[in-house]
Image (cartoon, rainbow, N blue to C red; front, side, top):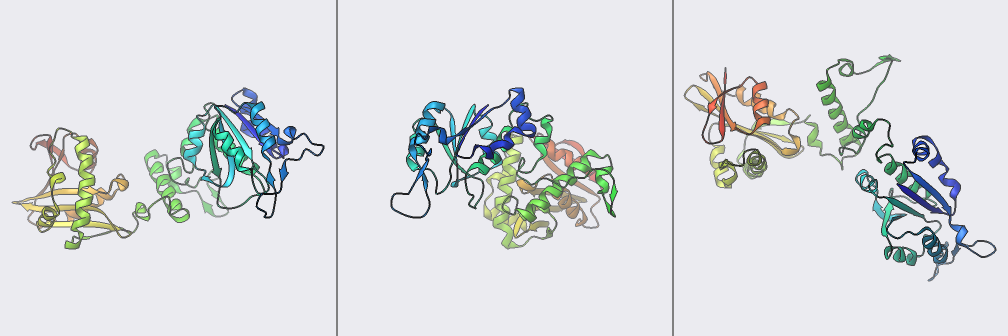
Length: 379
């Protein structure tokens, strides 16, 4: 990847020589060139700015030096990045996108900014992105260019010594990174969480995901819904007022079932609000609510001496967090005393569901209609 930076303060970009960026440059992975815009100003004082048309405070960077710089550097076909507080917000997703470009050209503004004609002209020759690194004002665009460059080049293949480290960082999965610890195990009376010393990789992964969720909800609630924490989930008997949300949740969950079992007719997908209201009155129906939202449900009905479990559903964004097991346990506990066994049905292709039910003690008991299996468990 080649990166050109145009600035009137080239010394500001000296950090690009440091650490991994400098090493990657030495290895030939990156070609980073910093250019002094004043090189293309030809008066005695190398003037690059002038007063704004229409009046007002401050100075504006003149178009002539930029035009000559673009011509000499040959920006055609490159991606020109104008660092400005009025640009689109920079993000990890945008960093990944830019990491796939062959060439980036940074135009670092100063004072009141760059003459708009420079940006409009660049658009006729190259892709132009106006990017902001935050809702605040800096003296110039160099700090933003440094930040964007570091975020982008570390995603270039071969840049990081251990590429796996990239996948466990803040924002890579939409969450902030979990807390990290190292030796010693005890320091000034504070202990490393026991789970991290357990050697149980599954438990460690679950703990890290939970901690990442908690940190994200606390510090960046715009990135994660509080319900994802599942701390304050209320499981209670259904109310008629829940019917509308139940219908929406049911359709979302059974679309997933249809994908896993494409040749099976899913009755739940064809049900109306009136149908949902009708089955709410059959047997025992439990719903789970969190942060003002209905996030799960399950139904139990007695058939002779068998407690028939059905309509177990969890909001798609919360699946894999243990709520399904919690609802299953709750509906089992609600079974009447004369129920001697539990039974449920799921799609033959619903491998994930079957795995969860087996962990809860259920065993396959044969087919149950086209494309479905029956699973049972003794009480």
